[in-house]
Length: 179
Image (cartoon, rainbow, N blue to C red; front, top):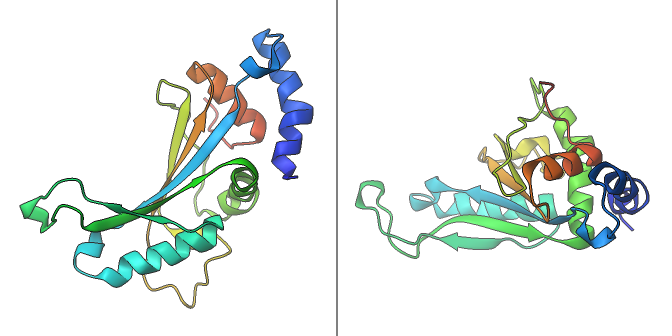
């Protein structure tokens, strides 16, 4: 069992039960999925960039990424409908908790000039953060790395409000900025 999943069941769930004043354990917020997305706009000119991004995303998450296609044509960007311009992975269950554990305890301490995550959620109990480059993950081989590519990481929770989701993510150990 993943370390953070065990922590959620043993420590976080009872703590949130008291904090939120709820009896039913199914009404307590939980992490449903983590979506990792890489938008590769330069893939229009160079297809190798998308292939490299998909390889790196597969190494980082341990799951095969899905290519994302453009919905509309935009002539100013030389973009045609159904061109592959990004990739994404949706993590659930064990892989989700393993990824979150590595993100909090291995990756974030490696980020240069890191002062904590912003505390703004989306209004529906979900949190999105961005990373400027994939080289902060230890799975990525820096000698083989051709292109620096950023990514978005979205944490989808079952929380009804931003306050509940914030408490959940904070109890997992997310390093939020002090207000």
